[in-house]
Length: 501
Image (cartoon, rainbow, N blue to C red; front, side):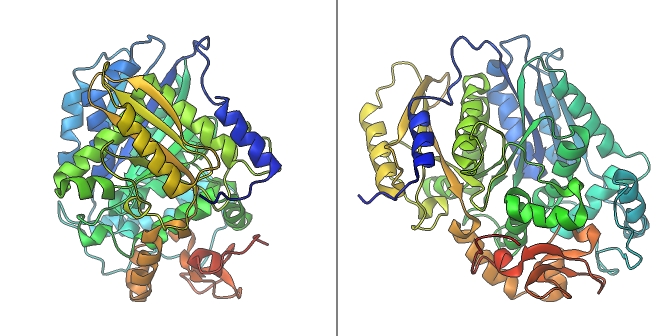
């Protein structure tokens, strides 16, 4: 099998990982606290699974707190979380829900017309654009209960909950941050949402900014966890909206592109995901079950296990691994850093007796992994040696890591979990990116607007070319000079440049 050429810097980093540099030493007694914000139904269901199955293990150490907040436009999706939370020790647990009110159109537009005032209070350097208008079409219809919420509308509903009058969402984020900071432990905050969903992916861009850059002041590790749609999901969550959703994340997590955003709009738009981003594909579960409900349940269990296993130690070690190999060659790998264009990490999982393929995980065959680590949790006495060896061999064959896959085994009180993280994936390595771009190109201008979210309040339509700066991205909604210092080709993913000027 042909292996790629690596630099001496990379070789030293991979050798350090093979020696277990990223593992937490047994003598390190500082516990790990994992806190979660779940957005939309997808995120709320993951919190429900954690409360049902994995939090007891996290709370064995009295110094650890567990904090969770579920946010959705439907209270029906949040009620089960409140019921489960009532059974947990309240001195170590804070679990809250926030059902975003869907206001009338008149109420919503009254709030949107004041958006500049809110942004100016939030960030004094905010440019007061005299051309500002609400980004939503004036004749937009408000969704009925249970209906899909477009991303641009979800952003506006979030703004109504965060800025308007009683500001319930601001209060919830304050309470969440206070509980996280009360934990006497290492902490990581995980923001879980559906990549294709309107509510989750529509509000995450603002909520993550308010949480990480405002409430925490970038002091806490915040990890994005995006659940990718599968073939069994409704068409509205696996089509064109994924193109702007991925590009918005790309312009946060790719350091060069993010610098091109904050150069125009300021530090408030610096990447809020200080611990990086992990994508979770649903396609392997869909191909295994053929049933959408069973698929969602399987993926929820995989994520809950990944976040809570070994009292959070597995997650912490994985983040150390990803940061170590994701750091630029010019920076010491132990320093926390933003990534370049390879900012996506993919959580793979499967059954030991089944195969592994790049396409099943939504990746192009051209993607090759830098370093692979399998993490296996199984009941005591389970004999999986031959099956796990076969999985490791297949991973080595398909993804061609520089070193053969490492395996970390632990005991599980429940089922068997075989998981691995494929590091440093580009958006152009994702099959869904290319399919979504094709669907996006067929939309009308108004429909393109409705699948965007981030930067709409600044008048920037991210995935369209700038009006006044040739070759750059970010069409201005109001016909003036709003833009971002990111080449349009880099947004399209058709010819990624070597550097952002």
